[in-house]
Image 1 (cartoon, one colour):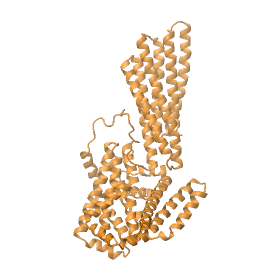
Image 2 (image 1 turned 30 degrees about the vertical axis):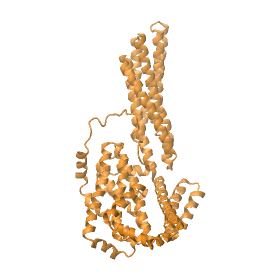
Image 3 (image 1 turned 30 degrees about the horizontal axis):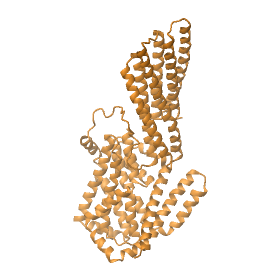
Image 4 (image 1 turned 90 degrees about the vertical axis):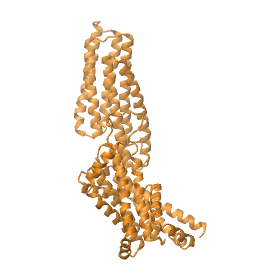
Length: 538
């Protein structure tokens, strides 16, 4: 066997994995934000959750993508642990479809799929058609990879040394570890099992028992990605990730022991299906269905047990002022739709920090509290840092293949982040007025203080209503936001006129007057930015 054959095997494997990635990416683009709303419809009804998990995984062509997305939703508070467990159960079944497709031995038609995919992707302007063409192209490249490595793999299988390797992997433990390591490396059980089935399609004489234990290992390997994704997340997300890996370990252990002690189970597969590739694909499907059935009745007790194993920390739900990203601080690549959703959550967090800082600044002003004012300056640094980091992440997300709806959302997020950062700037300005008044012994008139207090109260209410509208994508709040914003504008103009009258009657210190006018401006502009944030959802 020469170097040419080795290159062909490596190239074919690369094409297979690349085609799998293109298919997943294309399907995620087509599904886009629709899949998010679909996943969120999973209720505490475990059967509906399982169905949603199966469909979502088929739509994404990746159980890793659907489970990582599920962990993200749990972290965002859009889904509880019981719902997540149902989806994870379904995801492990949904991922078996890819292996079934590979086992159909349609690699001879790969050039046809590639040709159709290229035509649709290159020559059509309609984005929907281009996205579908991208999926078809990936499908064709996947099967062309099988064709490319088929001949060299058969030649490899005939070598004496290769038989020795296969004999070594007849050890069930080594086969399971091999499946685990390969899946953890490519971060996709779909790709790992697809490669295994593809090797059978190419005629590599891997013993069925070895393939069965490799599949058990791939199921454990895919949960590592979910576990990594949960590292920066909250404890509810960590519970979902721990369930995923525990579920896979239990399933692999139970069925591994069954296979070891009752080998006739594998004999049934070999008798029922003559094609080795189909045997592996069916084992993958039925094993996951059986594991899901085994644990389906214990979803609620498992959720309660995980809550005891990983208890909630005190004050964990308090607003965090850590100088780091939370929802976008992921250690692994995620579907673009998940990134867009996480960016939305990160922006909502930034908005809460900026709004609270504005409230803290006005309170410091009226109480003449310089310590609170200094805290405003500290938090403003966090606001600036988060704004910059979010912008950097949005650039990365924008360079991904997005659905039209997600692309529009990302475009708006750049402006929303800027509006939130500007609210933080106005809070900083108000804190500076506090320092100025205290240091210079200035005293506003009672009328001026009352007017500023009235305007600040309405502005803070407007900021909170606007952020709530953005966070929940609630169009019903827009009319209320519009009314409050108009009230802020009207009061700012009215109080400016009152100030001029006080100046003409010598009822106001000119130095205090400068502070008064500047603060009117900061509050009024904060209201404008809040209005922009709310109406970005329209």
